[in-house]
Length: 137
Image (tube, rainbow, N blue to C red):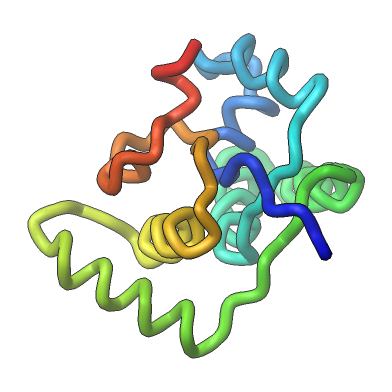
């Protein structure tokens, strides 16, 4: 039986880890140095790739994806119709918030898989009570 992931990784954590100018860069360098079992989604990868493509260039965007491929304790969860429906329900529930679909999928997975920690700098990912790593430090 596979062991559940310990933390969900959002786009903002990956960007902070790679971008030395980010104020959370030291925290995420420390955490990614010896990470627990981590989970993310293809939507997070798409956001990260797009961020590096817009901010830098194609080379940096591809380097971002290569880094993801090399992260052994990181699992990329598939997204299907159930996750999409659950994310849409979360967007409706929190319609007063500026949640992205990517955020809503992350919130669903954290709840559904009982993940206890979220690696993100985005306060929206704490809406359901799962602690953000930036508040644990």
